[in-house]
Length: 151
Picture 1: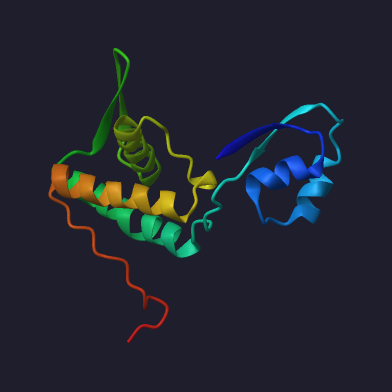
Picture 2: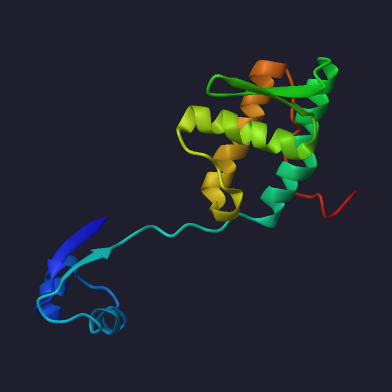
């Protein structure tokens, strides 16, 4: 949510936004000159993705995907880029890129796992699981919350 404003005094901003930490905001705003046009953005900060999420993706989802392709006797991936076709070996890295391309085709944006938050990572993993089930009849086992404590 963006709130455009022209810095005149602290009260202009506080009237618009109510009860926030104005000491911290005041320190940030003090670096601007009076009359300078500014924009204050309030964004929801999400939890970062977890190591467990990444572990599930790399240790369960990707190997299951490679195995499903191999069971269908597909030992390479055919990737179309524009009017060109590229055949690549069926590896975990190539499968990762393939799934990211499939996700990008659906969402319109390429996944950068390094910048994902927890919700985005969950959405990507859910997409991968559903795509594998739909197109390869592959059942990816659910994540095991007790994986650290084997019975």
